[in-house]
Length: 173
Image (cartoon, rainbow, N blue to C red; front, side, top):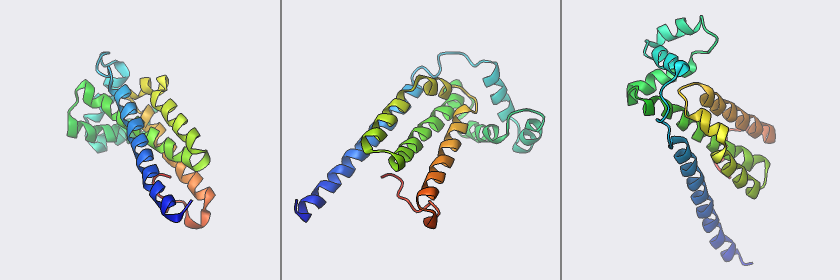
């Protein structure tokens, strides 16, 4: 194949992968937002919202007496300040965090597996019932998953190229 044909094929490949990425993320967001307001806020979610209503300093002192760390409640505090404290608003934080986890998992898979395996895993995670279920709660589960996946991506990048310290990779592929 000539050099011209090789260069001609590359943008198409990036376009296709970009389109696939957009499609998987749109699917992930859709299934996480579908029916998100149907069940009423339950006890643990109400606790999250009530705690997030406090000022950040108070959140720190209240969570010091609890088993859950304060980061989620602080993020939820500012999320509520931006989007209000309706059912859709408070639950959408988890949905957005979980879509971010799907995005990070695509990056992780691109580092350790073939492209085909990456897209199969991305589609499966986008539709994973337990992931969808927990992303529809106003609790810290998906934010924790997001940070853990981010830490895993950073570790794999660092292990693969320690001289670059892992942070100079392109975002995708």
